[in-house]
Length: 267
Image (cartoon, rainbow, N blue to C red; front, side, top):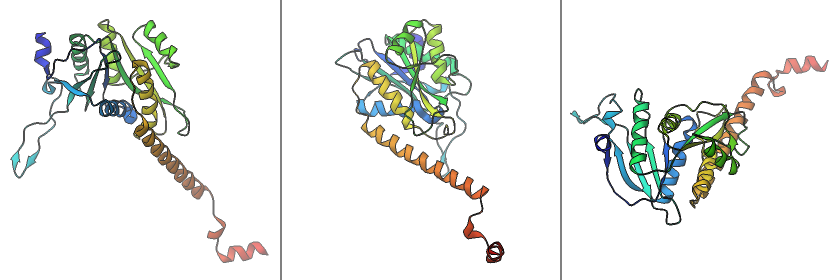
C-alpha cells in the first residue's frame, strides 16, 4: 500500500466490480492511443488516479513566458474508470509518452495499481506491420500471457500472433504482468508496412471493435469508422500521386516531344 501511495496519486475510490484494464501509450501508427482515447470519450470515463511522473520521467527543459520561468512539465500518465452495470467494470490507463530509461519500473507501477484495484486482466493494443494493402480490412492478431488467454482470443476469431516482438510499453507491460502472474493480452491491428508513420484509425477500428466484443461493452464506433474512411481515401490519394510520379519519371509523354522530333518521325 505504501508503494502505491508513493508513486500513484489516487483521486477516487469507486467500488469496482472485477475490472479489466486497458493500457495504452503512443506507438506505431498510434493504434493504441486512438483506441484508448476513443473509448474514453465514448464511455465518458472518470478520473481514478495519476502516476507521479518525476519517478519515471526527466524533464528535458522548461518553458519561459514573458521572461518568467515556468515549473518543469512532465508527460501525463493517468488512470480512469467506468462502471459497467452489465458486467465487469473497466479501468483505462493512458500515458502521453513512454519513459526513456524506466520502462520496466513504470510497467511494475501499472501492475501494482492493477493489483490494488483487483484487475482481472490487462489488455494492451499495438500495430502488426504486414504486407496488407490499405484497401483491405485489417485483421486483428492476438497474443496472451498464457495458453488459456490465447484460446479465448482464438474463439473470437483473432489471428494467432505466433512469434513476434511488441516494442515499447505496450509490450513490456504484458511481460511484467506475466512475470507477476497476472493475465494479460495484446490485440494488434494490421498496418501496411509502407504506412507505419501515418496515424491509422483503420487498424484502430478493428482493434477497438474486437476489444468491445471481448469485454462485452457496447461502444458506438461510427465516428471512428468515418475517420477510417477518410484516412483510407487519403492513402489512396498518396498512392495515386506516387504512381503518377513513377510514370512521369520513366516515360516521356508524347505531348512533351518537340515539333522537330515529330516531323522526323513522320518521315
